Picture 1: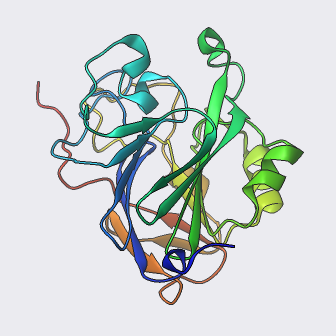
Picture 2 (picture 1 turned 180 degrees about the horizontal axis):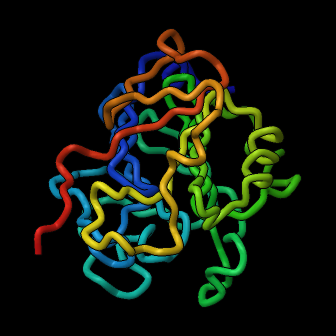
Length: 245
């Protein structure tokens, strides 16, 4: 049973870009998930000026670990870093890392390891699956009840096929699906790159319950929720811009 401090207040979810989110609890604790390296595969920079208390990494690819696995300078030396399964506490945030597997055929250089992260605060349970492939029965059982599920979705089906996304959502039954890990043409300096990652709009066409926030932040609590079953689409951080050089 969760303590009282997990049941009240609100949480602010801020979308940086790609698969990276900053989650801030009622107490002001800040969790950064899957920061990417500026201009590696993706053609745009990472957001400067973030000061997270902890950084969650689902797997060691450039677009999810800020280059840490490859020995690049890590931008947040003072932050606690979690990159493997386990259970941890950061102020009024409970972090639960579950063992998953990177979607085929990628990630063989590090054994296809991928940690599915559950962030629990303000009575809400937020799951970020990184680049996980189809969830196993154990994954689904361990996830339990999820309010907000962050899933890699794009029109080229780079990580998950369309039927795999549908099966995942049916199995987990989150209140809200958050799309991530898709191409952002407005930020890409090269119109032809990355050529194997699609945008989100074609996937969204004809879907019921799509909510475009029109913003990069969503402040949410148990009494401020959107209609159940919504697919939530963030704008990337307005501080990001297409590189000019």
